[in-house]
Length: 355
Image (cartoon, rainbow, N blue to C red; front, side, top):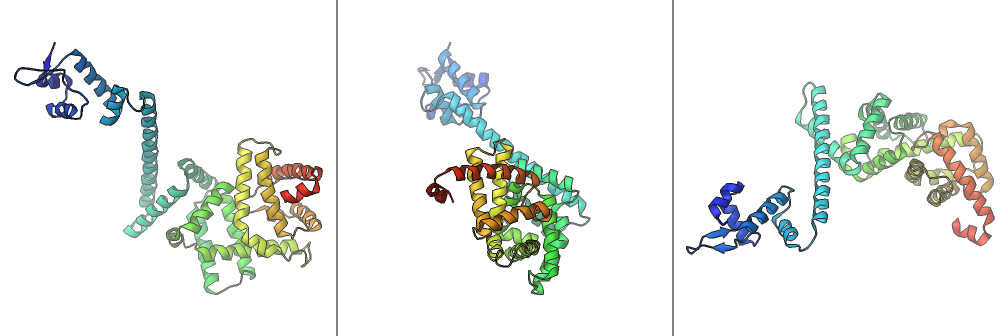
């Protein structure tokens, strides 16, 4: 049985132009020609065309269809896996867009007379967050906001205004007003974003995105001011137990390493989420970095470091902020005990290398 091109087009639902194109690119060439030069398709051609149509329904390109049918290049399994990966990306993008539209819809409904600048700023904020956080992390942050019974922007807005006022007045981080604001700021952030991994990303996002700083009103100057005032709050607590000599490294170390501490807490929490025991090599590697920061803050002076550990047991306020929790502290202490035991068992030269 031989079919002319018009008959084949009619039976398959394709256009004659499409079949001409398939012939031109070598995807489907007719097996015969009539005396008048018309294309004639036999049973094998029709079977090949059905294969082409089936593969096209998988959204493969014509080049990919040709490779599969001709047995060239990637096999069908690989091509299908690539299609699945592409569809997963499309689904993720569509879900992200749906989430943003839902958020934007809620914002617009909440504002009685929303203006263009307001909702464009909101949309830009959503886009920036999408650069640094996965969809699951964004959903988790929303859950945390609900648990805190307060949205980040509404909860923090008065604190941001207060910080800007103190900065405009050139208030010192040592001033009681600055230290009180730092206490409230750190407590608010620890309630809204207790996960150190999210907090670490959130801080990085603010540091790297000037447009976000403009939108939120929290710039590098303000973040540094709150960090310095927070260090002073801690300094006041330690000063009840330690001498000025013992505290001489503390201010500079904690200010320069504030974000490193948050990152360490994030790493520890990730290890805990993976159910790794405290003696696992990955956990021990993270705790070595923890110990290095700790030693830097106290001038590598062992008696002072031992005092500090006992101070933390008496002063729970020292554990607030940066994503540090009692669970992380308990887990880290188990790991530190193992780390110290292993250090004592090592030759002194190896200990120095580890430190």
